[in-house]
Length: 149
Image (cartoon, rainbow, N blue to C red; front, side, top):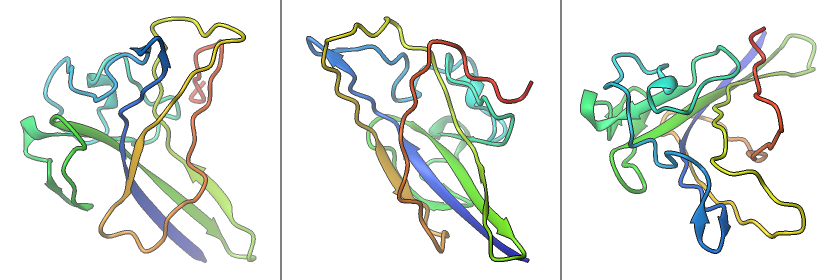
C-alpha cells in the first residue's frame, strides 16, 4: 500500500484588505486562550478551529514547540506561533485518495460584492517531508465549515 505523508507549516498571515483593513481575526495565531499542551489544539488560537476533526497543528513558542519540533525547524514569519497540517495519500491500486487537514476561522466582516480583496499567506514545507502539495488555497463560505458531523 502506498502511503505518503506531507507535513507543511502554514504561516498564515492573511492580508485580506479593503482600505488596508485585515478582516481575518487573529491572523498570526498570536492570541491564545491558553498555551497549547498538544499540537492538535488549533482551537486555542481562537477563533480558529479544525473543521475536519483531524489533527491540524498549532505550534507556539510558549510550550517550546517553536522553532524546533518533530517536523523540523521553522521560525514563525512574525510573532510566536504558526499552524500546520498534514496531507496523506493512500492507495493500493495506483489510485490515490486524499486525506486533508484544514483550519478555519470566521471573517470579522462580510465580504462585499464588487469590492476587491487581497489574501496572502506563507507556506513552508516541513524539513522532514519528502513531498509537497502544489494546490494549497483558501475557501470562503457563508456557512461554518464542519465536516465532523
